[in-house]
Length: 494
Image 1: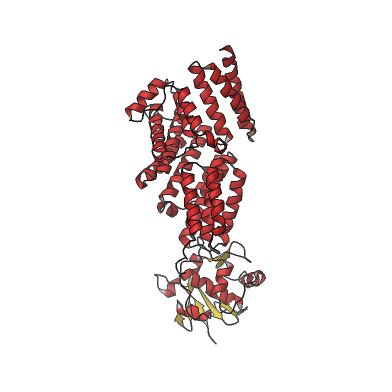
Image 2 (image 1 turned 90 degrees about the horizontal axis):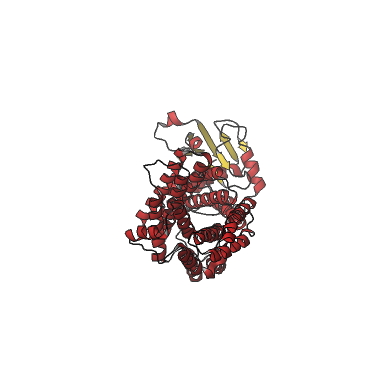
């Protein structure tokens, strides 16, 4: 009768490190010489997990699905949920109850408890178990090796995905969504990574449109891909990090909860950030925004400093990695954050001020023009109009500041600049979230009043009222309507 014993490699002497001895028997499992646990599936299930663990899988960050384990066990047509549950339940009353862990005991995915496994000894017929020995025990003719290179992506899928990325970079959100719809039928069957790539882009579009219900749906599907999809370890780690960042956006953007969003961001592994500059930019950018909101809510100067540090790290990563889209986003958010923190008095007097904020914003504007980015976004203009009002700068002073940086603005007044920006994205107004339109129209109206154009200001306030009524957020709707009320009496007197 063949007997297999489970072990792990340790730098310490075996006699000192071994705490448990497992014997895999043809009809069951024996632990530390205790009576045999009679079950044909349990030893094979454990052997399959050991083999996967040896190949870098069956770990908490790269668990194995039920289907993957079945493929490793020769002669096993299917792993029924009830069979798996009964097999694992046999371990409950023994010292190795925590050795095999799972998201759900009956359906997985499954992984091995690494610290506990390190204290176990492995042998097959008195020999160390590894590689081909485990394969023979599982009935395989040869060891299960790392999968071969993935097949070539279909041309239609690759083309539609590239078109969607191009449109996304330029703020063409609805055309990008259409391109992703055209790519969906061409996803290779069983290619979970290719399917997740579409899901991530759809989630990004939903986030930028403020379509939080769609973002929730995409996050749910991406979570299922993480739990049940067949993804390589590194791809799973990257996907988990991106899903966490998108979930943090949902907490912050949809629910207005900064603290839970920060907790979600803290779930991202440092190793994932270290290996992906784009991911590091997205993480640092949102972390800086969330910390800013917490600093403003609590009046906490320390959090304000952390906010600027996070945005600075994101901007550094984008700049050094040569990512113009990420760089312009980080520069704009750094500028807006500086302005809000200065207004709240949370930065030292000798620290950066409104002019520094405007310089970063002008850099973001220049990048957008140079690379044709964010053409349907009004955020940079909103930040510019807000900072100019906060710093009490007239357009001539702003133009001097811009010209000193070699980035002159193509207008002669705030009113003209805002009109240019509004006209440039006229064809894509439906892609701009309603709250963004409200903020822009009211800021434009305020500057139009300051420049003596009461007629334009009156029309802009009227448009802002119409946009505010489209908002689902009651607090935001009331805030914008109240701001419109404060402007209308000034227009009547004019």
